[in-house]
Amino acid sequence: MHEMSLAEGIRGIVEEAASVQGFTKVNAVVLEVGALSSVEVEALRFCFEVVMKGTVAEGARMEVEPVAGTGWCMPCGRSVPIGQLYDPCPHCGSYQVQATGGTEMRVKALDVDTAPRGA
Image (tube, rainbow, N blue to C red):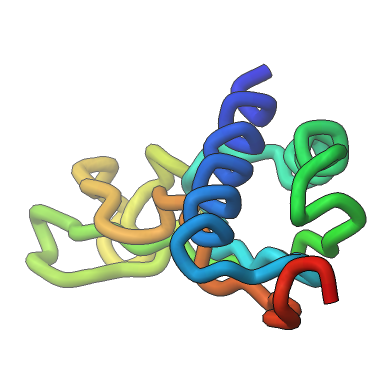
């Protein structure tokens, strides 16, 4: 399950940000998850809860903002929406569609408390 390694990567980003910025608690982690990213959101949600235990993000919400899939149709020469990798072009039916968007997953924002430590 690669969602566990994704959750550990998110933890690393959160811990680095907490170290640099000095916040004390994370209330929510906002992620952008592409429709073509092959990320199982519910599995990631479970892994997120597990790996955040004992960190500044323990108990934080994981909010997901979906990113639509897009591709470049070579025969049409235009950008087209696609729901899955290897979908045909909705205009011409060609399978020569290169994914150009919606393949990513990234941490978009952190909702944090910035009270001084020990306060």
